[in-house]
Image (cartoon, rainbow, N blue to C red; front, top):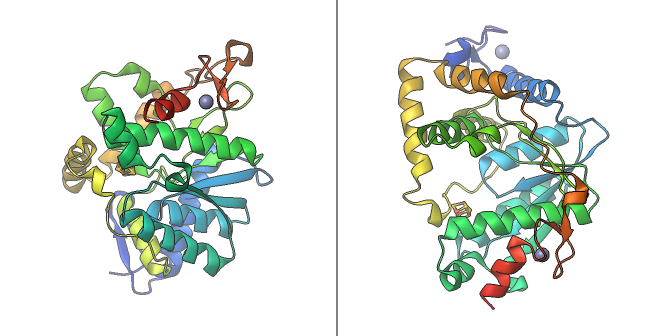
Length: 297
Ligand code: SF4
Ligand code: ZN
Ligand code: ZN
């Protein structure tokens, strides 16, 4: 297998692009695809202050790496979820990555704050992932707001987004479908803009990028993800893609074209209240996060 650019030995074959690349030209392809998403969806400008949410996994570390190499002002933000073993190993990966490249990091430790995920889920009698979603969303936004960041970037890739779209179509969930978009605008005075620059790249490609560039990431999945229905949709899409290369990106990008003009701005600032407990904007007198945390005290 030869690289389509230089005819040297290829290290990866990307069937949907009908192309194989050597390491150098794969890195070039990967960066081009990321830039294409950033420009097409007007994610941010070169001067913006970007906070990347990092988990220690391949996608978020690769995103952090690529944005840093592109010369962006980027800071990694890690939330220690308090999941014994897994959280410690992921934090180690984030810290060593930041140290190696001399990158700025912010760490929020839920154990120190008194509300680690397994504890809150048990006390609130709710699923770990539901609790985790509420808590992570809160800290991502609060940290970005407190730190004066312009935009919050996450490492969601094409497989994540296309499988989420498929799941939402299966349930005809219009509200979620409308929010399946690589850019969500800022809202009120405190809600930060959210972007997903890796939406044109698959999980296999981010894994290859990480391995080829010596990025050491946590390989194990979060133990709470076992049996998640999202994996069923990912498997289904992977079978389709295997048989018909290019189907996944076609499915996803055609959907984006159809919904590109939907107004996703959350709300005007005058519709928002201020949470009496934490001072962040909320639709109610007390925000969802504060109500959850108080419930388990
Ligand atoms: Fe949180 Fe669930 Fe994801 Fe684990 S699998 S990080 S608990 S949302
Ligand atoms: Zn090449
Ligand atoms: Zn609050």
